[in-house]
Length: 430
Image (cartoon, rainbow, N blue to C red):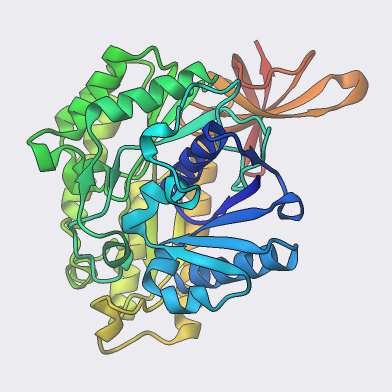
């Protein structure tokens, strides 16, 4: 059977869809690059914003238009809105998040133990930008799911409703998946989870123990951690980055730089505690990249509160980040709050915050002109007599372009960075 897999949303969704690809292949089925080729499709949906929910519906409809007669919907949006998902064209069934790990075995009417997951010739890794999972598309990074669910009750977040309580995957399973990915050719491992920093709390351990064991038990060339909540970390955590295999990049969601707004959000941080954590990271790890998430127009956000938040965002000098316009999600505390901010004001604040983050990201990139960093090449395009145009990422998550005499996909090179080119840097392979 030919199977098409697609996903939107977070890196955890990507990790899950890649796991499904391995399981389908292990059962003898083919993963195809286009829905036009497929007999069956699986769509991993997202509900973090209204736009994500809309995108989930749109992608399912597009898959149906492409001629796929049987579509399985899974993920957060279809878990929250199963009836609506079932009513979309050609949706065979909806698999909620609570049953997602067994989606493949249930679909194929197999016992999970019969799926012999031996390493394939190439592992399904991350592309430069989100794309449907093709059959033979080569990538360089592997997303590994270490944790799922969340016990926080942030007022704006629907993920807790969709994903359930926080739970950690056993260390042995995570290590096994990493070894599998490395044997398949991955050069970078990205640990993912809804609340990754809480890993181990359900069995009296800590995320630092997970990191230490991965470094001790595997020969991973580069290990990157996805989003971490600031309150799960302390200054000692950053001492682990003495190991050069750890990517010096942290994505630490702020959401607001205003203390009163953070309280309404039910976030477990203050601007002061966040500032102290960033200082600790930068003290331990020179030139570390810190990126973030910020919400524009949270309910009750006054002009003064927005100004306070903006000033703090500028003070932090982030290496980049995402700005989300607040959208009410059913089942969350914020959706019931009074003083919802007008749509036009939210859009204006989004634009201002985005400009501030763009400015600090540009300044961060400029710091590295003239320096030499290691780049993992993730994409190539032929350039004739000039050679091959390479694109990849440094350890601190700077996007780099360079010309190579031969394709260098999935290889690491030292690159001298010569100039900023928009959101990338141009360099010369040393």
